[in-house]
Image 1 (cartoon, rainbow, N blue to C red):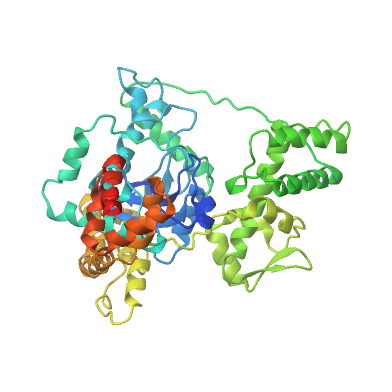
Image 2: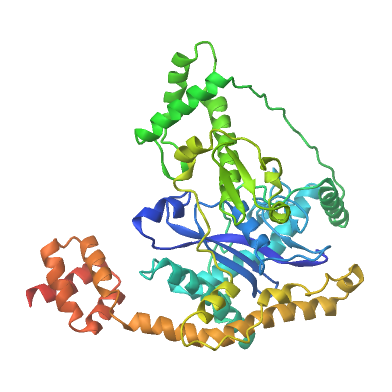
Length: 509
């Protein structure tokens, strides 16, 4: 039904523990501290690509853009595509469902049949794309370390996520029946509907949109005829004067200085209404309201700031403090950046005098993605460690994603056996990586786990959480660490009451 479909793509959040100063960048909208993990899988629930490490506050658009621009990132042959959810733009190489139309599997239960070609397409799309949701569900259910906080450094936590994905592939390859999937199927409400973030990392096109419409109509024609209406509304716009913009910037600076700013550049409830009243005093008869005027201006400024911020964090880009614009070392660097960031096209040498002021408003906690790693990055890090020569002959798993010299022709894409063979090559390439470095990484993790290097920090934080005063905290920690097996027992106790009883035993002694 979905010819030339390579698999499904989506993101998930995995909770991590980071230093206090980094928490704002890792905090997601629900308030949890997590890393944004991009995953791509094939129909056999084996992952083709994984990119953990981006901070939770990063939008899916930035993570996907990074995955596409990496040397060993996602490569999509012409004519092929991945299924994505409604949070992604329907563009070349990424087939998304119709927005504003039912697109979750649960919405067609209890006999609620689709009534037009768009709903029918969304139903079939959701059924096929659900494979990535099942993949994430089985992965988290299989590995308890992905469901709870870890006391390892963040770099080790990111490597652990990649390792779990690789071992998951190994299990799928070696075992005829995956016990993790069997257990997952026994659970109720297995659909995982992530919140949709409306993003625009992949440029849409009329050709791709028309192709989706034709595909949807062909699919629906097999069941029943139908039509759809496209209702669009016009949004009114307001032009801000220079004085109004300056007044808003001054008030935003004051709001930040007074502690009204939250993580990720947002403001506390009621702040914009307060700014509205202050603007009315500074700019009488302006008629500026918190909604939609101030909200719209903040959204525009935040988008512009993000574009420049991302450019300045790339090699070959710099800030001209005199002209207040972005400068590029060479045309080649600019062309390469434009291939994955077309939204920045007009910003080369374009003055933007308020960038530094917006950095104070939006920039403090902006995600950087410096800790994001693909499996190849992980292998390269291990190769750089002293006395490690186990991975010198490891090839790139992403090289299996496409030929080195040229992309396949349309005729080559038609054969099912060729497509199947290609899919096997992708997985075998990743499995080759898993076979070669899992033993090494497992040994390293085992050493960390068995050592008591993290015991003082763990015990101090856990005993403090349980309510022990600092003097008792020190006594219990010292007594427990005299025999590391005591700490291991303490770690596996499930309830707080049992932990307190266990710890008090050392205090009494």
